[in-house]
Image (cartoon, rainbow, N blue to C red; front, side, top):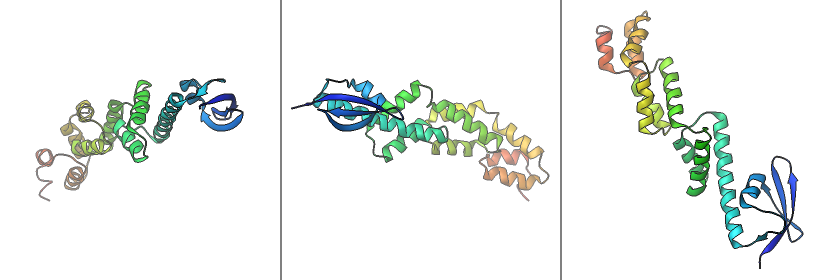
Amino acid sequence: MSRAVTALHERPRDRVAVELDGQSWRTLPAEVVVRVGLTVGRRLDRETARALARELRRSRALARALHALAVRDRSRGELESRLARAGLPADARDDALAALERGGLVDDARVAACRASTLARRGYGDAAIRADLEGRLVPPDAVSSALAALDPEHERARALLDGARDRAAASRRLAARGFDRELLMELAPFAQEA
């Protein structure tokens, strides 16, 4: 036999205390109460309980993802991985991430473009930028687009080498930062021999 919702009490931080058959039951996020349609008089039958459990999982996934995004912009893959490690089911992860994408909070192309631009300004080559983006679980098409939007690698390398006092040391540093070694040999052929 199902129990009936007899009262809903507003609580701080967008929470609602739910009473079933006159007894305190649970405090839920207000969004979950609204999405499930819990109202005074509604019976908490099996179907409603399943919907409630589904919405609670979705709400937890959304809250965890938003918490991670508060620290820094992340790719969908990074968020998916974090939510999976937290033990949240696939349907809840997908729903939460889809909502964040619709809201513009998760955008792999933006993450890739911003990160690639930052690394290029810090003197990194295409190989290092690609590795960084792949490590952030950015999809390959977004990685390719981000790299294509940068100034060509040879122009970035030339600018860094032209401003260096010790071209040999600068060339080694650029090679360590993911610039193509053959490109560096073309730009500073004698620097590599030093």
